[in-house]
Length: 590
Image 1 (tube, rainbow, N blue to C red):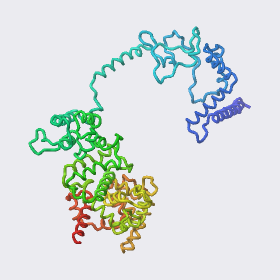
Image 2 (image 1 turned 180 degrees about the vertical axis):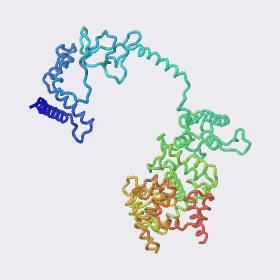
Image 3 (image 1 turned 45 degrees about the vertical axis):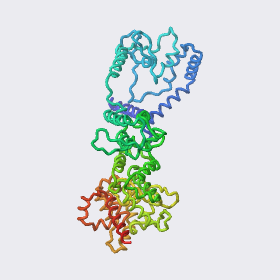
Image 4 (image 1 turned 90 degrees about the vertical axis):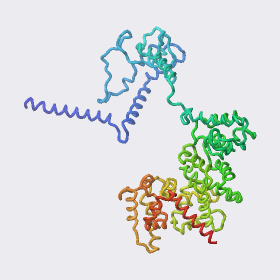
């Protein structure tokens, strides 16, 4: 047998042994299935720690260290050596091939060496002042390690701290200099004047100075001519100058502001300035609106907080004087106005209006408009009496027993039975909004106001939230094909009974997806997708309102051209105008 043939089996055996060792190493360090790298590393470290702590030598060493710490004396040198010669070395297996190994061939750096050793806990947590005095530890930092504290005074340090660099020592003084320079710079952002420029505050206070210069003690009935004005018609000083000028609020807010300033019949300059500085100074109109109406400075407005100022409006506004003889309609009018305010401003039906809600709904400008306008019907936002008249008459028509409550059967008759029964069921399940009537299963007048506002103008955002919550049966924020089929099947059956051409669910769904722009393959639609389509009302009418669906299919192009130039710019305003004219014609015909 030749040498090559003799060496071949040996080489093969060596390769087999090497392959077997490699397989065993792979099994040792292989990560189990189902565990991430971080979870496997944590479990492996825990395993090694338990092995280390289970050694008898480790337990004895730790016990000696704790006994020395309790007595307050230095740790035993033998314990320190035992800690350095820890059985951890015996317990630990070899490092994985992919892990970097610590080099042992380099000796420890001498304390006198100029090279920089690794940073110690003492270096991290303690700094030295230029005069050599140790600085106090920063809050939140840990003290030096236990080994450093147990070290005897004459013993060689286990880890040698490197000297503090001169840059760090001098940086403390430089930091103090920068702080002094920053304190002398003018502030870019001043919270006290952020919302209200100083010039506007000065002008407001100057108007108050002019009023109190003539009336040191001012009452609600005191009148005066406007300073510097050409008109000789006297005005109420507190209402017209203080409230509308200095406070920048509606004039009918004067009684609550006057009572907040003083408990007597006259207010002094100091009393008003104290109120102004504590409640109104450097605040925008929305914040002032809440400060005046919210009791005890709670920072938000509830439903009942609007009742006092609106009652004052009813007593003082010339356009609402005819309601003084009918107190029951006064109450309904006030609550209708508040419902309309919360419908537009309270987007998530929390029952609270904060400053951001007041700004979004432009409540301050609406209140100022009604304060200075004699004809409330010219104001289409919130305060129109014609709109209230239409809402109340609709409610009265549906309320057949006149108990001021609507049942599910009563509401189903709305719009000549235009709503689907499945839609009405969802409304009485209180899906879009919880009822406030106090009677289970019955809709009150305020609940009806929310419904009719959402029904007659489905293009505004609060209405879209109302109807989308009805269409989204599982409440996951999307309407699926199953939701569409559930509601449209009833509409399809109603169309078939009326003799119209049959429309399949798939065809109707494809048309709605094309209108929304989601594509034929879209499995679900979100509120934002329907809103961005530009025709959200048509989508909801297809699902819920048969009469409006047919009216849209048979619409007159001339009507669209007329609506673009009409003073009523929303679907609600146009519907209320037509409905009021119809009711007025019926009233004249009787």
